[in-house]
Image (tube, rainbow, N blue to C red; front, top):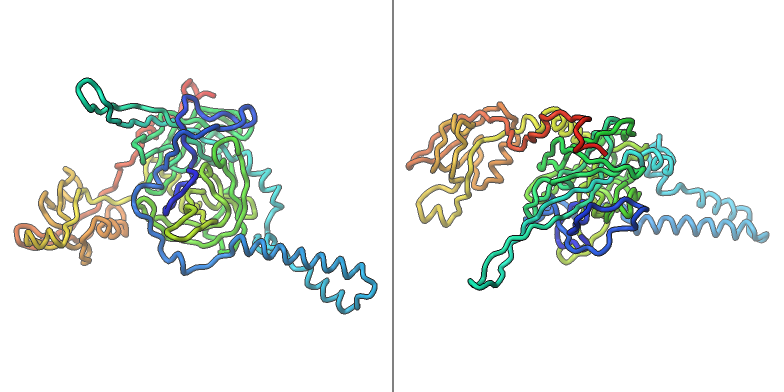
Length: 460
C-alpha cells in the first residue's frame, strides 16, 4: 500500500494481479506497475485504537540527525583549532573533550554489541522472501439482454512478505497475514513459495497459523539452512538500538536493512478488533517487511516485524511508528503451531450472541446484555445449561453489555477454568457455573500431515 489512511497497516507486502509469482532479485529487475493493492488481516475495516499513545515520548529521527550534526560541528571546530597556532591550549583542551562524545549508535547499543555489518552478514542467510498466491472473487453488475445481472470474476493475486529461518531443516516463521488474506475473502493462500538469500526457490507447505497473534509456520524441503539466533525480548530497554531486515515492496529490494531504537515496550494497541501487545520502534518498516526479523545489537531476533502506523493519523502526520511481535511471546505460539496445529489452552464459551442496545432493552422490557442467538451443541455453554434466547448479563460478577466485554473476561482465564455467569430468562435471573472448553476452531488440519521429502509438490 502506497498510502495509509488513519489506520495501522500490516507491513506485509504489495499485492498485484499477476499470473506468475514475483521474480527473483537481479535476474528480473522488479515488480512493475501495481494494478491492485490489498490490505491483509491486520488492517481490517474496523476502527483503530491506540491507547496512551500521546503520553509517551521517544527519540525520533530529527533528534538523531541533530545529534549527528552536533558531533560533526565539534570535529570541524577541533580541526580548525588544532591547525591554528594562535589558539590557546586551554581552548584546544575544551574542544577535544567535547568532540569525544560517543555516537548515538554506540550509546544505544548493548555492552556486548557486534559490529553492524557483521550482524547483517550473519543474519542475511536466515532472511527469506515469501510469495503467496490468493484467489480473489469479485462480483460486478453488468448489463445483459435480461437487464442488470451480477457477474463474479476470480482473479489471481500475488503478495510478498518476509520470513525467518527457524531451523536448519526448513521451518520458516512469518506473519499469518502474509499467507492468509481476509480483507477481500481470499482466505488461505493457494500456493506459497520461499526465496532464499542465495536465490534458491522452494515450494512451501503451510504447517499452521494463528490469526489472533498474527503468526504462521511454513516448511520447505531443504537442509543445511542457516537458522537465525533468537534472543529474549524481555531484556529489551526503551532507547536500545534495533535493526530490521526485510523485503519492502517486493523482492526487488530483497534484504533491505534499516535501524532505529526501541520507542516503547508493551505497547497496547487494537488492530482489526484484535488487542495486541507489541514492541514499538522507529526503525523503518514498510510493506513487504512483515514476518521479518527485528534484531538487537548482538544480532539476535527479538521481534517479528508486523505492522506500522500510516503516514496520516487524523489531522496529524506521523512517521517512524513500526511495531513488532515480541519473540519471547511468539516462541510459545510457534511451538504450539508446530506441535499441535493451533494455540492450546485458549478458552471458549460456545455461544453466538448479539449486543442488546439500550433502546431494544426499553422497548422489550429486558435488561441490557448479550442475547444468545445460538449455542454450540455439546460445548461449554450447552453443558452449563445456557439456551437460545437467554440474555447473559454478568460474568464473574461483572456486568457485560457487549461481546468484547465478554471476551475480555473470558480471556483472563484458560481452558478448564470454571466461571460464574448470570443470565436472564423468562423474567428471572439465573446464576450458572460454566467450565471453559479449549478452542480448537483455528486448528490447521495440515499440521497433522507429516512433511514428506518424496512429495513432489514441495520440491524446489
